[in-house]
Length: 68
Image (cartoon, rainbow, N blue to C red):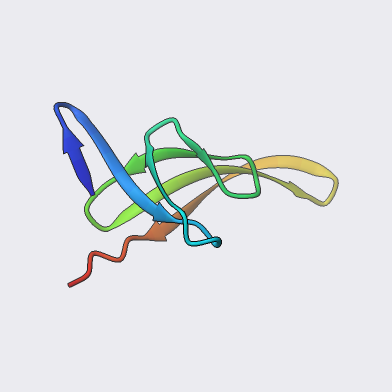
């Protein structure tokens, strides 16, 4: 977790081991995920998934590895 002014960033390790930073509004994942919240413990994504022929938005929570 990184903070610069009023902005909060998180570092994400991609499957190819590349490190990228994300902030609220960033897109990530395979289901059109958009970061909607970042705190010390987790990132929340709003994803759009197809369920029984209709598209719906769901919130997915990814726990952060704080190294502690």
